[in-house]
Image (cartoon, rainbow, N blue to C red; front, side, top):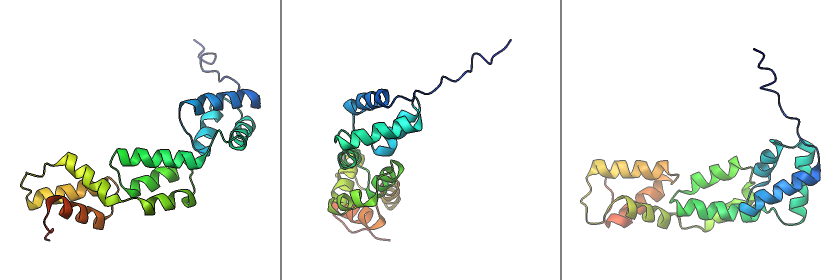
Length: 163
């Protein structure tokens, strides 16, 4: 049995207008970064058609990395993740640091960490030293710095953290 016909790749479309229409369909659902949209378009269209479509979307302000980074920022905060997670996600999507640095500086990450703590532990619980260690590790895995982790835990529990 010859499987070569089963695995034939379909030729990529080279029409920039079709790629632009596809880009608009994607952008009508949610915001994308330039890199993310380009990669998505390259699955079906040639690199030149995808570049042309992305360029046209930027020129007409249909695609904005500023809007995208603001959407990503809101999402990260709503999921109670920290600044390190935010920066990693932004870099993965090809966003330059100039777009997200101000958002990182202006955000009260301790408040985000406290929100996470309020969902993770109740204020009436007595928390042992081992539990505090686990909570700090959990905050750290979510992308918070050590200082923010300790400050948030101290503020939430109303006592200082002893080593």
